[in-house]
Length: 416
Ligand code: NIG
Ligand code: FE
Image (cartoon, rainbow, N blue to C red):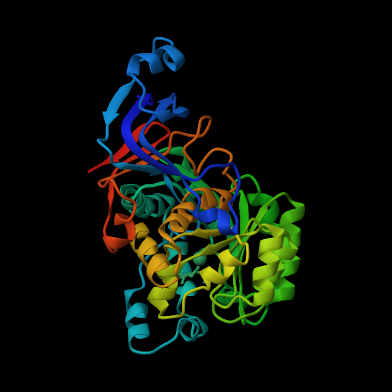
């Protein structure tokens, strides 16, 4: 049943239907002794815990509602993980070990490991295997309160395997457990067979892949990085994507400062992600363009890099989102709790800002802020109930799950 009445809640939510920039990120709406009514999967009422009968008369029209008394516990919008590579074949623990022993992420990639090694495994995997592995990860995300997840292709790097990955993402979406937003990332790396011929691979993406994958993917993403896709190739590819109707995302300024953020702003991208090495000019351009700056602290942590300058971005008027970057290489973790802790402890974000970043701004980074990311009438009934009555528990219980119940479109999809 997707009719729910949640009562006696401490409701904490951003408000709005688009990304919240700068200062506004720390302003949350708080309702003590609040209630939320979800009918047919959609939120119809958010307010005080009025007597149930009154609510039924207003909204019920004879329908029945499952009632949940949360006894003062915190209720948040469902988390949006707006940057993941959750569909892939194989794991790379040996590479992680090499990094522990001093090798860098890019040196492993340049020797044919890294993304290419997942490409080799993904090319061999069946759709059923890809879906099964991703389901395993998805269930863990749901248990941490995720109700919308973005999923990228990008471990095929040839037509058939990119198509297979997008089909696997499509199957996950069709299960309708939670919303899955598909992104085409054919420009994740230059595949082995095109080594030294980057522009020819870009031509292949533009001519063969982009036109065919338009229906399967909402976004087009690219790894804009030194010795991967540099600025001119990135501009050419992403302009072609725009002309076909894709919305844009960028992996930008992750390893070295290359001007990826500036390019994302120039092309009106929905989000620019990573940004560990963003320039001051890049911060200004993202703020002016309204491009969401999606920060991925788990990746910086796992790569032992400095964190993205979140404070500079928020204080400079950017809309910041947080996501996990879950992938088999640079960051094999989908931990929402650790993301929150790292953002608060090392990036100096306030707890309120991390909530906005993981809800409304994540939804905006997925292009779904009109339906997701805040608790307000008309939006999907995507709700997280914490085990605690205080949001300060989120970073304080370091890396541990504070979620008691996850609700997606009015259905309980996880309950501890
Ligand atoms: O976002 N930097 C590029 N892509 C991924 C890592 C992919 C991988 O190592 O498999 C990232 O960190
Ligand atoms: Fe990524």
